[in-house]
Image (cartoon, rainbow, N blue to C red; front, side, top):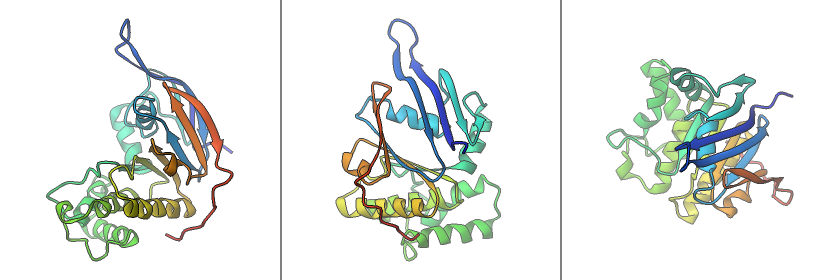
Length: 237
């Protein structure tokens, strides 16, 4: 089976020359469709740079990145933007919500760039917010929501267009334990429903809840293993 994601000898070098920084130093990996993966590492390990590559937010200095069999490592900004919009749902630690838009407006925003009409994108946004348990908070703006609720809006925004890949960058980093559990349960449910979910984290507790862990140190893969002891609970989403 062709892997959903295939990375070959990926390098990312900043400030080439005497003071160069090798953020990625020869990364190779494959991720199959439907996997639930954590990419874990400390600050400066290269995990965020790898996330930018996998999310088509940046291109490597050298190496190849195949997404659905297509080499996307040298595409133009416009082509990468189109891939991001159709293939990948992003969830960020800082929520990245627009302050003057309510929850529905925030979820609708990426749907505008897909060219959907107003009624259709409103219907999709409402459905997504109901899925994450915010059916009664749709008209609230970010400053009227708790951190956990804001992150659920961000999740709804990521899943509204039903992208095959969910890429979550430290999705629980700013949340309390209760909200962390809620967000992780949503991510588990997305995986159960067939999505490929990739979490970028520094937290071993978060990593212990996924099927596969890829540990990054100094821009290289130190370890890549399956969580054999993980309790395989099925969530409905």
